[in-house]
Each structure stands twice: as structure tokens, then as C-alpha cells.
Image 1 (cartoon, rainbow, N blue to C red):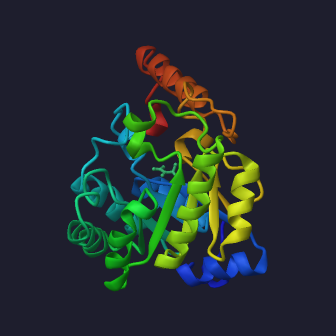
Image 2: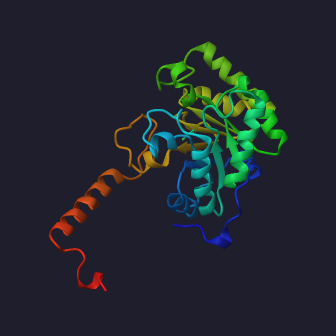
Image 3: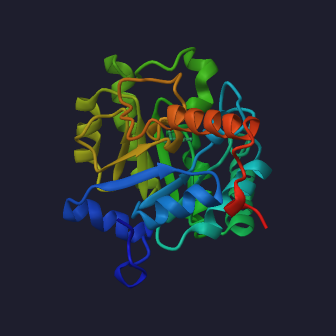
Length: 272
Ligand code: KIV
């Protein structure tokens, strides 16, 4: 089922906030290229995240740290060209905002100006509040990201569930309030206990979108290549695979190789 053009209204930061008020869950997926962004936009996804997970998924890096601002702008502009309805949010990559608020603002401006995206996402709590406020003064909507924040992987040491201990859980709730007060329009919570995520979603008025954070939040996000089953070596508990494209693509390529070798492709109808 795809969404007919006449049936849709563009998704905005205001409309995702309205969804929370109305109890309608928000759907979000990542995309990094034109072709897949076009498919998921016409399938009716609400929010497309041009995540810095592109560093893993598209470039094959072990972490999200190496991806550059230029590379994020390249991915984001490819997605923006495809999208007619969804809200497009782009990750500020590692090293493009942690230095100071002026640097954060100039990185956010480059993303907005050079890609045409609608909002940016930053990882962190109170430590980056000034940067978030400065970006907001330029009229750029900001999505927060707490819990497991992959740009800090070398501080955490592992990708396991965050905020299981009381002190970290308390800091997370306080950071979520800070981000709401600073003016973030929404918040991603990654890989934290479902009970804690629900508590945060109930405590703040902005939408909370979870990944590995249970069902008590206002929306869900997954990495597109994971939910399509293209990345078969990654299987966290929270991931539901809707397709098994790794096997489907392998089979299709094996058939193509076989047909080429056997001179079965192209046939008479497939040539000029
Ligand atoms: O980069 C990304 O894909 C993300 C999601 C996991 C939320 O930040």
C-alpha cells in the first residue's frame, strides 16, 4: 500500500508533537540514499532519519565516529530529493558539534542549507544544552538522543543496555527534562529498560521515539537495512526483521551469475 499524493499532508515537527498529544504512534526509519528513501516515503513512514549509522551500514566502518559532515550532507541531500511527505532529520556527526556551540550552529546550518533537511539530531544531555539552544536560535529544529549514544562508544566500552543502574537512570530522566526545556521537538531513547523509557515518555511533553526501549514510548525507530534483513550478522533482541533480503539478494545474484555463465541471459526478447 502506498500513500496517494492527495491523501497526505507533509509531516512537520508540529505534527509529530500533535501525534503524541493524540496518542498516535510515530513511525521512523533510517535512510541514506534516494531509492530507498523514495520507497519508504511513499509507503507512509512519518520520519526519516539520515542517521550517522550510515558510517556502519553504507561505509562499513566499525563505529559511527569516522563519518564526516560532508558525507552526512551527501546522504541527506540524496534522501531529501526523494521525499515528498516525511519529516527528514539528519544526525550531526561526531566531531561536528562537541567543540563549542558556535561550531555546533555552523554544522547544523551547513546540513540545513546544503541538504534541504528539516531538522538535526544530536547525541547527549546537559553537556550539549548550550549548543542545542544556539542551534534553535537559528530556527533549526533539534531532536535529542539519550541512552546508548553510539558516538560515545569508547566511553561506554560496549553496546549493551544503558541506564540499568539507578544513578544513570536518574541522570537520563534529568537530561530528558533538560532537552525538553532547551526546546528539542522530540527525543530518541536508545537501548534502555522499557520501564524507564515509559517513565520518560510520561514525564515530558515532547515525543519520545525508542529503539530497544520498549512499547511505552511515543514512536519507534529502526535502522532500515536491519529491519529489511540486509545485515544478517546483527541480531539484537529489539530488532524485528520484516524481510530477509540478505538471502533474497544472494539468491537473485546467484541466479544471475548462473544465467550469464549459461548464456541464458539475455534471451532474444531482452536484446535489440
Ligand atoms: O544513526 C542512527 O541510525 C540512529 C538511530 C539508531 C536512532 O541514531
